[in-house]
Image (cartoon, rainbow, N blue to C red; front, side):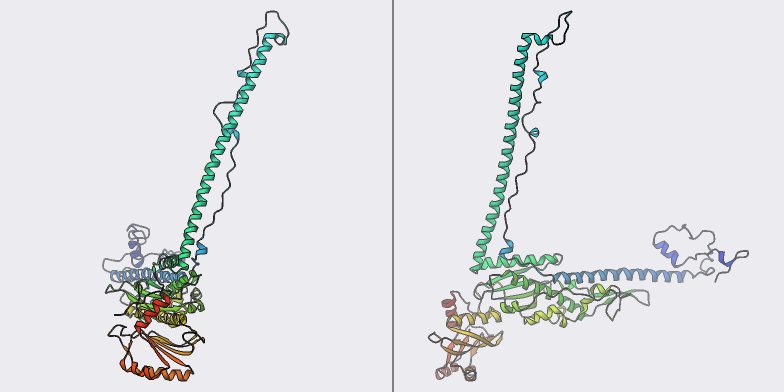
Length: 572
């Protein structure tokens, strides 16, 4: 406590500033030591060196307070940088969920609108140089008057002067007509030249639009014929346009089209794992040090999966929206993490969806609506307050409840359970196979191939009972008089061991199971189709079961060539 000097009331006591925390801040900010209220100013009450002055803290205490202040400022600055990272991630999540515009052929057509010819300038702005002929330049000189003559009109009585005057008027009128005719001709020539240049430019514009639309129509014709190059070109243009909303987050997606199954295989490059902030902020410890506050790994994984789910849904929507002619029977999308410790790409997400499933799914979720301003997580550890939580509070939703991930799982997507643990998933199909084998096809691709083959053979009214990565079980009906009349139970599979000589074999037990299914379904026949081969015991049993028909891998490849005009590769 300070006491007022004698003769001065407490209310007018001069306040003194002791060297301490504020002085250290002034020094940190670069203030001169002789500044206002600094040491040496009248009224400063510094104590002896190494001792506390009146009301002072001492050098050791001052240094401790100054160090804590600097640590607090550093903690605040670093926490602000972490907040900026979280806000950037929230912005990416929002923009990744924006709807994409369809890039179909109709939207890419150009139209030509002729531009009107601009109005020509006035005649005074055109024509040859030279002023307009003046009468003063043609008028004859007035004859001189003799001395003593009076009357201003006497020159008019001079017949010679009158002849000269008439001839001068004719010359002036002739020159004026020629000058005006030259001006008009020059104006017409300039206007004609401008008009010709304008018409040539408009013709070039119209020709460019026609040529572009003609080339686009040629691409559309090739696309309708399901030519791979045309389909892939259209898909990649649509995928590139969809990526425009997040240009600061490159997520290129390549497309491969398989005419055999009319399926597009998309390879999506996922962002690096380091994109999601690993910290919640920084805090000041009791030892006056700045300590990072790490985020729970589950929160980071949730945020990363939410982002890649939106990128995957956006790519699926772009592919679905562009396919207005319904060339695609399905889409397989694989999300690849390229930045891995081993350098080998890792599949973290895979979707295998047919066209009907895509049509039933509203692919992109609505943009997140975070909590009201000031709301935040209950665990505010590492933050000075919860004011900034409203910016990205939605990031902390449970991944199991996230709308984008829920929609992916409705499409039977495989999603990594632990992206930061580098837990990968099996890709639905591998892109880049010119002539795919049965094992290279996705589950939907294989089901589509079997159905297409048997439909062309006469079976219709398909009803799939079971479908998985290894095959499917379905019922179908063939019309009377067709090659496959009556009601059928179809069991098609592709052995995991491959379809080559060492591949897995269909056993007699499986044929007995099929015969029981035929009886339970009230069907007349059963078809056991495999891309591998049958065991000897199975072939012997099939001879005793006339209602069971067999098709092996060689038969499947032969049907593919005869019914579809395409080849199916031979597995290893």
